[in-house]
Image (cartoon, rainbow, N blue to C red):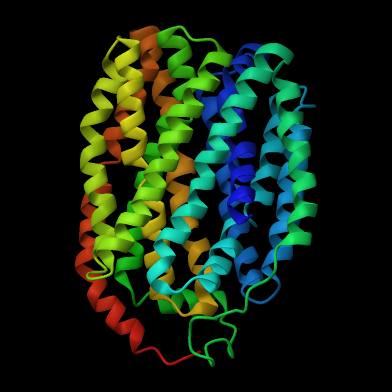
Length: 411
C-alpha cells in the first residue's frame, strides 16, 4: 500500500511533464518557465516542508501524516486543471509540493520498522519502484487523456482518485512499532532536528552520499522532465504516443533499475556494506556512455532502445542510498535523516535539474533551433558525472562511520 501511495505521489508530480508541451502551446511558455514549473518551484516548498514534517513524523502517527499528505497533493493536482494562467498553475504546483513533502520520510521510517537491516535495501527499493509505477501511470493517463480530452481533464483524472486512496489507506494500513528491530530503549528519547544534524555531522559518508544522490537526481530530473518534449520535437511523436512510449521506457525500465539496485546491494552488501555505494557508482559509469547515442542519434528505434537501458542504470541509486542513510542513524532519527537526504537530493536534482535544462535550451535555441533541447540534456548528463566519484569517496568513509554508529549510546 505504501508503494501504491508513492506511485500516486509521482503520478501527480510527473503528470505535468507529459502535459508540458500542450500547456506550453496553450499558455505561450518558454522552456525555462517549464523548468521552473516542473522543478524549482515544486522543489523549493517540497524540501522546505519536508524536514519539519519528518520531525513531526518521528513523534506521532506516521500513517495519518501520509494519509493527510496524500489528500493535499491529490486535491491540488485536481485544482491544477482549473488554472487559467501561469501564476495559477504555479500556485497549484506549490500546493502539490507541500502535500508531497509529507509522503516519503514517514514511509521510509515505517518500512525500516517493518523490516530488519539486512532486508531494508530490497524493501526500500520495492517502495521506490512506486516512483516508476507512478511515472508509468502518469505518462499513459496523462498522454492519452490529454490527446483526446485536453490537459485540464488529465489533471482531474489523476487528482481525484488520490483523495479516495487516502481513505482506503487509513482503513487498511497499521502503524508499526517504532524501533521494532532495534534495542528496546532506542525510542525513549525523541531527538530534535538539531540533535539529528549533530549526529549526522559525525558521518561524512552521509553527506558525500547526499551530494552523490543529488547529482544522480540532477541527471534524472533534468533530462527526464524534458524527455517528452525531446521526443515530440526531435522524433515527431504525438503527446499520446509519447505517453505510452515513456510509460514503458521510463516507467518499466525505471522500476527494473530501482529494484535491481536495492536487490543487488542487499545481496553483495551482506558481506561488505560498501556495495551499497559501489552499485550506484558502477551504474553511473554505465549510464554516461549510453547518454550520447540516446540524445544524438536520429534513428528513433535505437534512441528508444538506448533510453530503456539508460533508464535502468540511472535508477539504481535510491534503494541503496536510503538503506545506508537509515543504517547510520538511530531509529528515532530515520524520518529526519530521510528528509535531510531528500532535502539535498531534491534541491540539487529536482530544484536545479529541470531549471538548468530549460535555461540551457533557451540559450542554445537561437543557434541550434529544435536541437537546442538535446544538447541541453546532454550537458545535464555531463554535469552529473561527479556523482560517481562521490559514491566512491563515501564508500571509503563508510566503514569508519558504521563503526562510529555502533558506539552511539541508545537514545
